[in-house]
Structure formats: C-alpha cells, structure tokens
Amino acid sequence: MQKEIIINASDMVQRVAIVEDGKLAELFVESEEKERMVGDVYIGTVAKVMPGIQAAFINIGLEQDAFLHYSDIGDAFRETRAEGTAEERGEAGEDEAQDKRPDAKPQKRRRRPPSVVTLARGQEIVVQIFKEPVGSKGVRVTTEVALPGRFLVLMPYDDLVGVSRKIQSFKEKRRLRRIVRSILPGRFGVIVRTVAEGKTEEVLRADLEALLASWREIERTMKKSSPPALLYKDMNSTSSTIRDLFSEDVRRVAVDSRPLYRDIRAYINLVAPHKVDVLEFHNDRRPIFDKYEIEKQIQQSMSRKVWLKSGGYIIIEHTEAMKVIDVNSGRYAARREQELNSLRTNMEAAREIARQIRLRDLGGIIVIDFIDMDHEENRRKLYEEMRREMRRDRAKFTILPVSDFGLMQITRQRERESVQMSVSETCPTCQGTGRVHSKTALLTQIDRWLRRFRASSKDLRLILTVHPVMEKYLGRGLGSHSSRLMLKYFIRLAVESDMALGVDEFRIQSRRRNRDITAEFSG
Image (cartoon, rainbow, N blue to C red; front, side, top):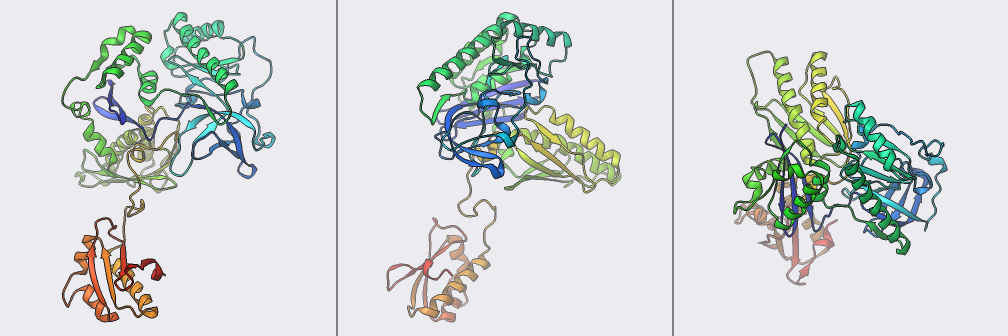
C-alpha cells in the first residue's frame, strides 16, 4: 500500500488528506472556529456531581462544562492507566497489558469502582480532553493524562511499560522494553508506539526527555494557575497527523504553505532524516487538492449517495442516535443467480463502506443494511471482509456478524465531529431533517391562520409575505390559490415575496396597524 499525506493550508482552514493507493482514506479539517482540542490538559473545578449517571460536569472554562464519567477517573485523580495517545486511544486496543518495572510499587492498579468515587462541588481537578464536542454535547475528559510523542506515550504517576501489539517480533518487543526500563524515571509509565520499532536507545531517550520536559512545564503552570485554566495545548491537526502517521510506507508529503513546509522539514530531519526527500512544496497555481484529485473525492464524501463501480450504491444517513447505511444493487444485475449477485455487491459495498467510515470519521453506533443473502456461508464471508477492511482504521471498533435480517452493527470510537459536521451547519429552513413542508401543507397553515384571524378581527386588508417559490405557487388571477383565500374569508390579500424566508415560512402584516401580526394568530 502506498500512502501519501497532502496538506492544504490557508489563513482560515487547514486540511490534511491521507491518500492510500490513490484513494482518499482520511480527511482532517481544522479551522479558526473549530480548533483541535483532543489532548489538551486543563485544571478545572467540579461544577456538578451526578451520582445517578455516575458522572460529573467539570468547569474548564469552555462554553459547556466537560463531561467526566466515573470510569475515566484514575486513582487519586492523578494515577493513570492510559493505553494509548489522547488523540487515538485506538492504539489502546493495540498495546500490551501492563508490564511493571522491578522498582514499581507492589500494589495492584485498577480503576476505581464507581461506588467509591468521591467528588465534591468546587473541587479542583486536572483533566485531559479525549473527545471533542459533538452536537449539543460538550467535551469528554479523563483524569488519566497521557502525553503522546513520536515514539512513546508518557503517562505520569503510572508504572506501566507496554509495547504496541502491531510490533510482531517478540525479540524486538523485549529489546524495546529493556531500553525503556533503563531510561524511565520512577512514577512514570510509557507505551512504546509502533513507529519505535528498530529505533535506538538514543532516539527513544530524546523522545522521552522531550515528553518529561512537557510534563514538568505542566506542573509549573499548574502551581501558578487558578482554575479553570489551560495547562497544556496539544499539537494542531496538521502537526499531530505528521507525528502520528508519518512512517516508512509514506512515499509523499506535499504541502502548499511555505512556513508549514519548513516546520515539517525540520521535524522529519529530526525523526527520520533518510525520509526528508519525500517532502514536497507545492508551488503551482493550481490548488494542491485539485492536482492530486482530492477535491472531487471530498465532494463525494459529503453526498448521502455513493455509487459503486458495479452500478450499485450505498446511502449514508445521519441521525441523532446512530448512522444508518443502506446498500442497494442499483443497476447491477448480472446474469448469474441472485445470491451470487447479492454477495458480489455486498462485498464491494463493504470495502467502500469501510473507507467511507474512515473518510467521514463516523463514530458511535453504525447500522448497515446489506442486501439479503440466504446462505450463512456468504454472510460469514461478508463479515470477514468487513473486519479485514476495518483493520486499517486507527480508531477502536467492534463489529457484529450479519444478522438474519441482513443487518451488521458496528460501534466505532468517536473523538470529534464527523468531517461532514465540521464543514457544514444545520439548515435553518429544514432544521436538519432534510425535508420541508410541502406547498400544500403550507397553504393549509395559511388557511388555518386566516380562519383564526377572521374569528377575532374585523381587519380586511393584509399583506402575505412568502418565499418566491411559494408566491409563484399561490399565483394570481381569479382561479389562483390566493384568490380563493380572499373569496373564502372576504379579505384583501396582497402577496409579496422575500428570499430571506424559508420555503415553508410565511409572514402576515396588517395594513391598518402597519405591523407584523403573524404570531398573534399562529395557534
């Protein structure tokens, strides 16, 4: 697999595209309005304790209080059992169980049972963000602070030494453990990341010293800060992507910002000087995302319908509770039996769905409605194909086998809003439903309004303002809908248009009183 990292940076937004074998696999977007928050460390105060849901709300200075579940509270609010970076607790599922150093305290380390968690309103507490706000929900935090580096993840007040499970060689794991144990000071834990494979003690020591310096700076800031206050700001999306995803299989890093190019070049020279030649500066009038044909793929990712090469297609719907994906055969109708056709379409759809889940950064509960298949063996093949394709995903996920109804359920770690949510906003007209009242339904609303109005008012001259589309529908002349309303209620109704109104909105003004009276008779 050939991997490319393409970076488009402007004054207002930065976009980082991960391309695998020519296809857009992941997209990270960060703007001035929505800066990356995962990994930031705060000192805050307990604003509200909710024993009923085993959680508390923490004031860290943001518009909404942060959510802290009891299961995310470590011993003494300081000791941690983090299993990966704050950015991707996905390497959490890839890291080994704890491996204590000989000098560690001989006590068992477990999460506090919810029943013994004690929090009081106004209590000071240090937390780290591991999930960004989604919709109306604020950030989610943990007391298990973890500082990610290029090769190591530092966990203050811990004694864990773990190695990524993606490192296959037992001999290499043992070597890395031995090195880390020899350089790690007391009361600190470490997770060795996948990219550390083959690295020397000198390289790992330099990474560790940088992380220790960051933690010492956090401690100094903590002593002189009053809550709520930011103690540590993690890297932005661009820098963190280079830190976490730049590996030996990356054949190109292209960037269109000269300052960013210099920063990335300096970083690559530090961590992988033999790979510096893969970095390119885009000095072309043509936009960088157009050159690498990324813009078209981004537009496709925003569409609810995604076509498959076979002629089938998938529909991706967002709801408050879950994401729903429907697979349809479309134009695909090979001459062979239906079962085989369904299997081929489903297998192609599974590969595309796995890519779309990563690309759109879909999280939470995902339900996929595949084309029905009668044979259990075919459903098993589909399940294995989806598992195989999802292994490329860095986020933690769980996949259940295809049910008898043809449904597959996936839960995927959610740390931030999906890409679609980050680059869009709720439609002010349909309020996110994707649908508006029909013209007939709006006409009925106007009719009911006029009925209420005539029951309590003798005013006969009104101005009805609607969207231009609705104005055309109401029409003019004796046979029009507006004429029928005037005859029905014996009033003079002047119809005007206003582009500022939604297609399912209307306003009515009294000529005699010279003011808007819509709300008075809206029921």
